[in-house]
Amino acid sequence: MDSNSLSPDNLPTNTFSTNTASVLDTLNEVLKQRRHAAAEDSYVASLHHKGLNKILEKIGEEATETVLAAKDAEHGGEAERQAVISETADLWFHSLVMLSHLGMDHQAVLDELARRVGISGHEEKASRQP
Image (cartoon, rainbow, N blue to C red; front, side, top):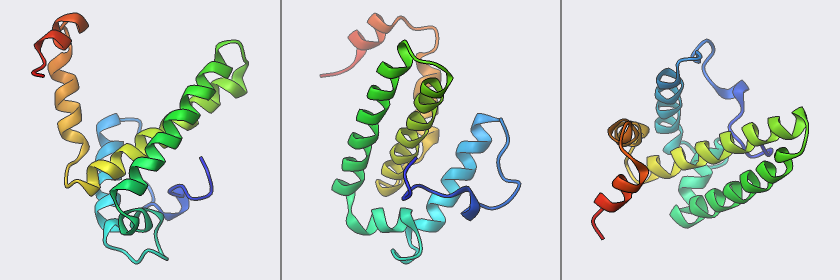
């Protein structure tokens, strides 16, 4: 995570648990609060002020860093494996910022993933409308 990332020091204390939905719900609330903050006070606000293209640029950057970290982790050690986790967290975080910018949140994504559970990937892909 780079120096522009959301700092745990800036998050409400005792808000995170290992429950995935709880973490995502908490992040969603933080993103909502910071969306309209002053750009100089919040990294998230600064992204929103710069617009969707800047947010998408960050997603592309984080996706590339995740891919490179995964390549390193394939034959690497624990440090390389941890880098995959860190880069994936950055990618997910910036994806959540994008959803927030578009007035959406993570629940629709979780609902879509839940819908796909038990469906063959080939079937799911074939069912998509062009």
